[in-house]
Amino acid sequence: MQPVSIVLLGGIASGKSRVASLFEELGARILDADSIAHELLKTDEVRSLIRTTFGAEFIADNKVDRKKLASDVFSDKDKLKTLEGILHPRVFTRLTEETQKLSTMKTRQVVLFDVPLAAETGMLDSVDLVVFVDTDEAIRIKRAVETRGWTAEELLRRERNQWPLDKKREAATHTVRNSQTVAEAREDVRRIWNQSIQPKLEEN
Image 1: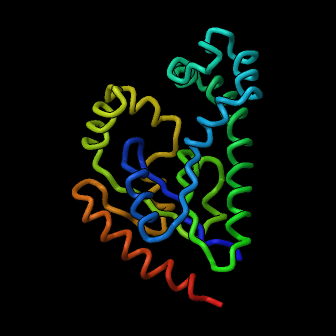
Image 2 (image 1 turned 120 degrees about the horizontal axis):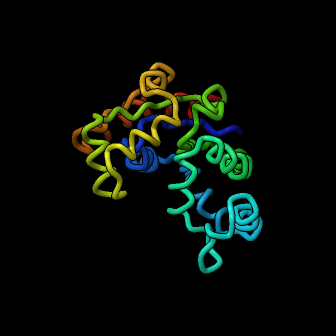
């Protein structure tokens, strides 16, 4: 039985991982594209592609220098597209494999896709719920500075490679407020679960 599927949208540093964990508390299985991409960067196949495509200077101690690679590709759209061409098909193959595993279980499951470029890669039409994580820009900048060591300019520069926030908000079927307390976000997640997910789980 196909799982009930959810995808999260939101700005960079909007706290999508925290919201994902709240869905996980209720029973959702999280499939994190960033984690999968990081795993892929450790494989011989992808490491070799990075070396031949971008240069040996992006490999240090036989590992991909993710920070250096990110700095390079996010300042050049063509390079970013090249990297996405390497990673995205492999990430989505893994996501599909994991979803198929969940579909073989006796009871219907809930799968949440935490995929940064979900809108840009065409996922929105193939899931049951699209949840927008609504977070004030000032809070997102503060989080990016404190947890990632970015500047506000860096966040905005990277965000320009994504769908505008207004477009993401319009595409969503549900919204979770994530600017204040965890309790506020948890309240929204529980409401979405009870109203839109639980009925699907109870369908024959």
